[in-house]
Image (cartoon, rainbow, N blue to C red):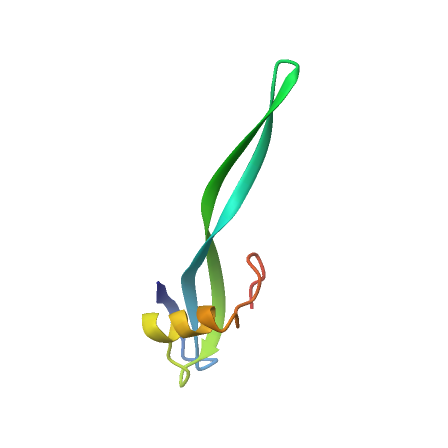
Length: 77
């Protein structure tokens, strides 16, 4: 899913927020003298700016994800 968060008429651009594919998360926790491994999933969140003329909807967002054309999580443009 992706949505427009903010539109700037000064720069003719829009800020988007989107969720991408879930990723595995591994956590190691000390339990007394032993270590315990836990595995779960986290949703990746992305924020990015696009020009006004490059509108993005859920379908085009899915295409970008499928083509692996996203910035890594945590990298903001």
